Amino acid sequence: MGTSTSSKGGKKGSPFDPEWLAPDSGSGGGGAGDGDGSSDGDSGDGQSDGVDGQDTPDSISVSPRYGSAKSSLSSYLGGGGRGGLKSAVRKMVNSGMGGSRRAPSSTRATAAGAGRLGSFLAAARDGTSQEVTNWVANVRAQNLPANELILEIIKEVMPNSGSLDDESLRNAGADALAELYEANPGIDIFQLTSEQIDEVIAITVANEVCNRMDLQLGQAYEKLKYDARQIQDFRNDMREYVQGQVRVVMEQPGMKGLPPDVLAKNVHSMAWKVFGSE
Image (cartoon, rainbow, N blue to C red; front, side, top):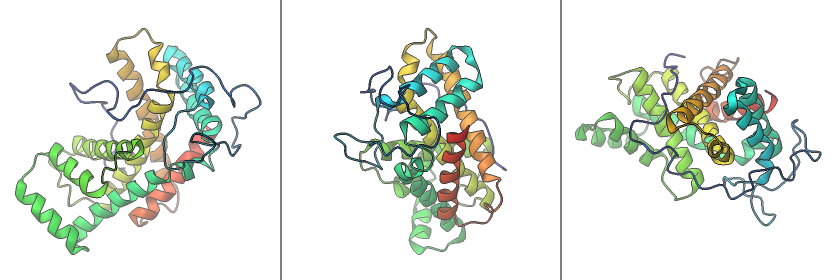
């Protein structure tokens, strides 16, 4: 990919935890689905992702079903290598999220948001929407620095409803655009190549996987006796791994030349299958 780059993590002065990160209300140990007959395979067990037996496919929720994934993540953080990280992601998908067939459905807002962002950037470049063209002209006239321009784009494409899902997605998209600027200083964000737009879509999807890992498995960090810098190094390594896997998905046959919304949906679905089988 033309803009591939490893994430440098949060910017200097930023809080350790993402601002959308809520405390884990589930138990840190095992629970239903951890060591009591649940499988690491694509079980599609039909367990609820919400509360009171209600399925909430568009909402991030914390569940004790993630206990085995937290255990594997703790092993990785304790020096167990990438094998522990892969196991943590696999168990998060299969034990916690109901399998690689269900995970894309329960996180479909990610694909929709990444697709909207890619479509907006394509319309800005091609001039195919008068509304977008007028918006771009107005923003250009303000001569905003890159960080403020990113925020304006995210606000336009991903309105904030106040939900954890939306805030997580907004952060994922903003981070993807920031990485694009980092790899290409001085780039015109409204004149991106198709390859660069595809990269933004892919990294938005990857960043959302990382965000979900932070939310669902974040209690594992609390047990570490390392300082914040060391923990951030672990998180950067996790992000590099996740982004690398999503980039591999992007290179699969049939991914090139797709409309942004279709590409986002396909990459999102295939990525969960990869993580569920790792």
